[in-house]
Image 1: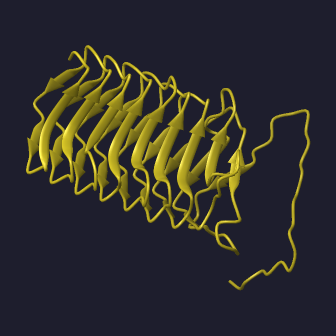
Image 2: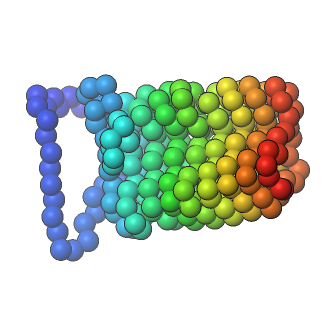
Length: 239
């Protein structure tokens, strides 16, 4: 194939009174921002089967603008299925806002400015088998602001500022993840209650392997915590 070059900004608006399949990126698509993080993708689709991405690459997407953070799943009930893709050199890799039941499987995230995966006010998502490296100033994965009952499994969260950061969110399940070589904590929480940790490894992080702040009733079972600058902190918390 060849290249298609657009010399000026282009926008397409589609309106419909019926269901529209917006995109199914499942055939080795590459999407590149033409400027320094000027492009973005924002989905408001409320069916995961109608916004399904597989085997795609996203390069340099996103900026610090509402709804334009990178690949953004935005709005109440917005859903997606994203798998086997790479998202790198952007602002965030994936930003999920208010949409429940998203599936994020087997993706690679690296060199994103603020974070790899950010989940805000969104519950019952499954984030599994992803590799998140080298988020410059933020977390490999962050659950924020009433993001409850999410399942986080078998992810590699490495060389970020924080591996996993949970803030003001409860009843999340963290299992089988590797959190290592992060510059600060492997895991950091603030007002995160009823979190379950099973079979995770927290190793060689720059500060604590696990840090609990204002967090209560958490369960830690069969985890490996070693070679961190500091082992464990339960500041103003009750496990």
